[in-house]
Length: 469
Image (cartoon, rainbow, N blue to C red):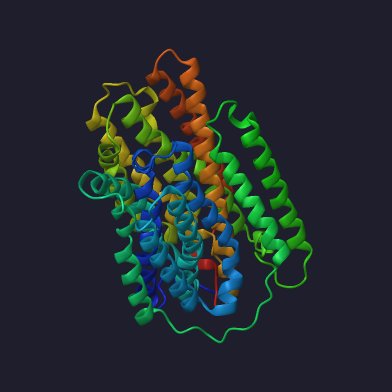
């Protein structure tokens, strides 16, 4: 039975804002540290290759834990799991701040990443289940705010902390989000329904954990000599892809409950949106590596100033989010997402010929335009993944879309980093090298425009199943 509705389910907004507060801490924990890696190497007296593990270890642990979340939610309940994840994140944030050397800091950051792996998919799952298939795009416009604010405000906060406070405060600034998130969850998250024992698919978890960790680790080495053909990249990526393929084979032949239900990829909204989320890692997030590097390496600006210059892009995304959600409910997500990718490509145009003296006012204006496109792409694309799914299927869809986004971001960042590195070696000037890399980013964006045509053309409101809830 289908019904047409564009109203948001009662009680969804308290859940959305509650999870938003906790989710901001996780995103800030990633982006604040990104600007501090080099300073921390000097402070702690270790090589840059060692201290980079405070970021690499965090991201690997986060990725490894994500596939466990559907099983853990079924076993312990969503409210309990969310509060437990936030508590672990709070404790590990404090421990990271109290670290006395690089080894202890890396260890605590790995544990913090594991907590983040619980929270990121749960943030989407809890809100999508509360939404009950109604007004998904408008709800997602709130849920995905951390993904916008983290990369914008994180480097700025990190720069302020490094300039005015001790480095330990890099890890304490997330504490208020965790404390507030726990208090709000105790008050606003609905009590868990009766849980039931669930057997963990140990083989599936081992295969997926090895696969994700190996691929992400290999891609993190992509800027080494040899690029993607370097053994440090090629071997772990191939091992990881084989393990992920083994996970898919193992999962699809199991009759009992799988770790992640890949059969849901038969749903065209989920499969097509996951593919576009993967590609958006090249078109959207890969360029997020290039733009700050352009400001820092070519224009000689500090990470703090480079972060400030990215604010117009964040403002543009905030401006377009609500309108994009409402428009996708009226005309369908396909055309909004397609138009969003076109706007992103337009917003990148000045960087295709950017020099050392290109007007910052011009670049800021086009970054605002690019941000409008980012909001128009991400909100309906992330909401589309949950169209037509039953409540019990939402946790699995959250994990599938999150993994697609995670792998796409890593692949996209690695590809554009290698493209920049190769162009730097071949081009006559550093400006020319950046121009080549931005052409690569624009090419991926154009490819995303074409692939957006595979998205379902039906309006989201026409596919809500009352029986599924």
